[in-house]
Length: 282
Image (cartoon, rainbow, N blue to C red; front, side, top):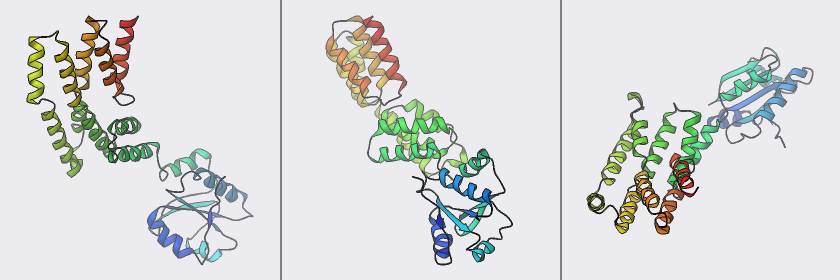
């Protein structure tokens, strides 16, 4: 059910216009029964904002019963709608409007899909769910690749799941004007992650593998170290080579599937290595 617009009267004028508009924009439709176009515009605005009550307050002023209030806004004719923010009109439309013009007007103030995805990604990061954060932030980035806040969230998710090259590539796109404290913190996190991905323990296992490339225990230990260091592609390549050369090694195949299943939804590595496994089987 579409929630009707909030009628503005002398009694609630100060609360809605001066106080509520500090929290979120207030969209006011000015209308009168004798102007059908104004009634129609109000209905369209109510419908268009029905799902966005958390982001915008839909209000209305009946210019017949609230002539004093309408006069304060200097309304010249109907239909008219205006946006109030922090007690001041900041935008508006007047006269009969086609649907696409109404939507274009509202799009400037209604949440975009990427806003919701970004918020969910940030919540996932707060809950230490890096895989989910990456999936959501990547979707937001695909919708709006220029948004710095989306880039920062995606970079952090990339670092946490070991996509360090992707994180570095994104950091390189941040303009000088946006290289604030958040940017500097991400640079430091990336550097630490790069250092951790090349630890002495991991190097020792790589040396052991070079000396005994068929030692399955070393392969499994090295794959585990790669995974812990978020070097998932290295782990997958190592295990796949083992499965490819030793088709009856069920344990290596299971470990390979475990690494694949631990990757976030939408990670290209998932499709790549599932396809490779399928090729082996058929």
